[in-house]
Image 1 (cartoon, rainbow, N blue to C red):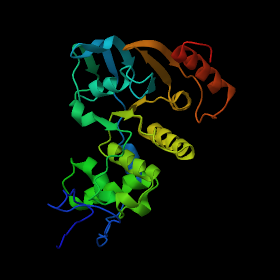
Image 2: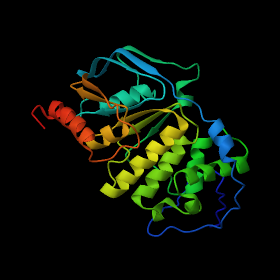
Image 3: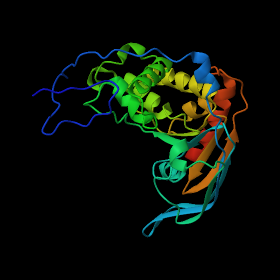
Image 4: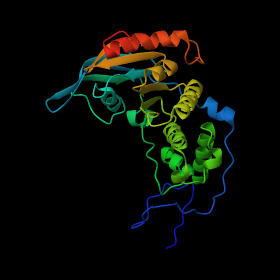
Length: 287
C-alpha cells in the first residue's frame, strides 16, 4: 500500500491501517523559513478576564459545583487545587465550553467566540499516532489555509518548546515529556487568550516536570494569556501561579495570592510557608 503524507497536512489514519510495534518513517518534507521572532512576539494577544457568578453544575442528582463565584483578571496565572472529585476539572470544562452550567453565569471579557480564544491541555498528550510531530502541531492551526505557512508556523511553535529537531518524527519515538511539549505547542498554535491546563504534568517524572513548569512559565510570561492550571501538586501551584484557589465540595474554600517575584526559587522559605497554609486547609490539620 502506497501512502503519501506531508508534514503540512492534518491526516486521518488510512482505513484498516494499525500502528503496532516500531513506527514506519516517511520521506522528509522541505521546511519553509521561520517567521521573524519579533513579528511573532508583536502579534501575541493579551489574556482575557472571566467571571463565574453563582455557578452550579449538577450531573443528575449529584451537584459538583455549588454556587461558585470566581473572577480571574486578564493575564493572571491561577492554580486550582483540591481533592479528587471536588469539581476542579468540571470548572475547566465549563470555562472552555465543553459543558454548560446548570445554573449561574460565566462571563468572558471578549467579543470573540469562546471556541476561538480558549484551548485545553490535558494530562495525556492526545497526539495523533499516524501524523508526524509537525503535523500534530498543525492540527491547532486550522485557521491557516496556506500549507507552507502552516508548516512554518508549526516549526516555529516547536522551536518555542525546544523540539525544532523533532519535527519529522513520530509521536511513538518521543519521551513522555517531549510528547507533552508537542501538546503544549499545539495548544498554543491559535494564540489562545485563555489556556486551561488539566493536570498536564501529572504523569511526568520529577525532573521533567520541573523543566516543563519552567517552560510553561516562560511561554506564559512571553505571550500574556490567562492560564488556569488544575493540579494536585501544591508545590507546583505555588511555584507557578499568581494565585491559588482551593475547591472543597464544589465551593471555594481558600483563595491565596502568591506575591513572590519570578523566577521563584523552589524550596525557598516563602514558598514553603504558602504550601503549609494551603496544605493545612486541604488536609484539615496542621501541615
